[in-house]
Length: 276
Image 1 (tube, rainbow, N blue to C red):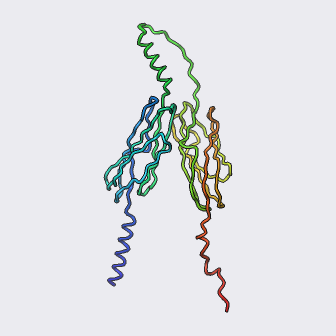
Image 2: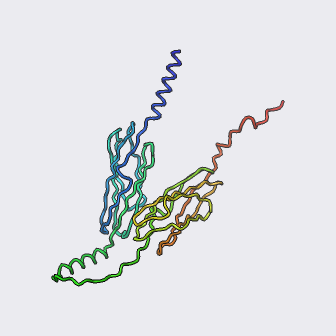
Image 3: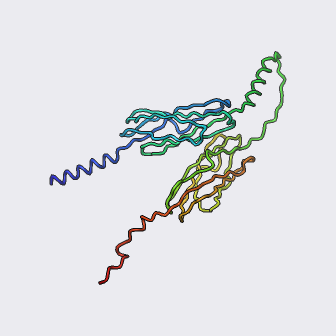
């Protein structure tokens, strides 16, 4: 009887240890820098709280491009304590709107957590023009400025995507591989996603919204379930109402292999007995 109680207690302790885990909580999932001048290094600090019951260890933080440099808390974050992930975006030579994703990898219950930074980089040419206009205005000493009528440009969408290629790496035959992409409307008009297509006709996908207002971000998830072992390449195309980019393509690739270890063991009922 005593040995049975000890076994039960051991199982309970094992279950408690297995269920104990770090849980990551962020102060926000995305940050908008707004308008910044070209050449500025825009920095934002995401605050992380460990709301779990085990130490939180951030193993790696990856940015979607080399223009964004991440820094993060290196030491374990104890339960109830706070850490940080800092993202610095270098806007030098990168005018126009941007959206960048940052993936936080840790031992938390959600091992991969994605945050976004976005904004609009004012080109140096616009900065010079604005400075010249400001100087001319300061030299004007008229109390009755002349009213000028200017025509407003038509509102148009402007599609941006955080990455245009992805490598799924090594995946097994019939193993589902998926990846998420952030689509951003950097224009002044409504962006409509008119259709989707894949070269191999084997992609499964989902989008949280096919119409994006100016400044809105949508999420596209692409899934593949390969049927045979081979080196896989595909081009996934998005069709839009953007007059400049009516279609935008995402290049996808993977190395699909057969896991023969799963076929080594047969059901005993299907094996004929030896005959003597």
